[in-house]
Amino acid sequence: MSGPPNQFTYHRTWEQIEAKLEQLEHEQQDHLDKAHAARKKSDKMHHARQFKALEGAVVALRWVLGDRRANPSKGME
Image (cartoon, rainbow, N blue to C red; front, side, top):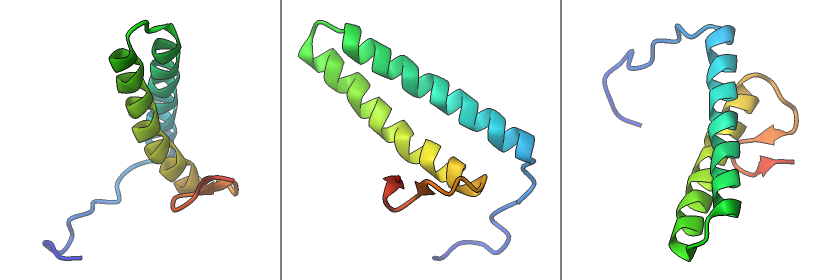
């Protein structure tokens, strides 16, 4: 992986990480609800894609927080 040294700050607190996880889980649920409520196939697909994209971020943050069920390469086990 290339890039400038010190490109990561590592200054996030556990509270910030937990707050971001909560925000992403809320957004994910919102997209799931909208997918179920959508009438047009294109709208359903849009929300399904957004849900799936957020799933990766949620699993990664859960892994960072030490959730034993979270595996960034496989998802939730």
